[in-house]
Length: 86
Image 1: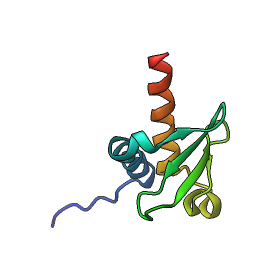
Image 2: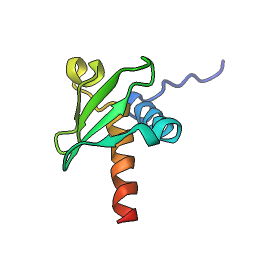
Image 3: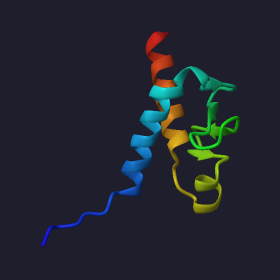
């Protein structure tokens, strides 16, 4: 019998955040010292607000499940890239 593994949701969100940055990084906008607007991966035209200090996003994953979502990971990448360029 083949061994089954269950994906770690945190790792999955990290991967999705990386993919979101790769696909739509030019649309991720810094709007404050630690705040970013990140496009939704699944809902065209919808944007999520991210606060990197709080690790919070306005998407349902963060609001209702109190989890770090892919938008936070994408914003962290955008922030790191911006810091490297400065």
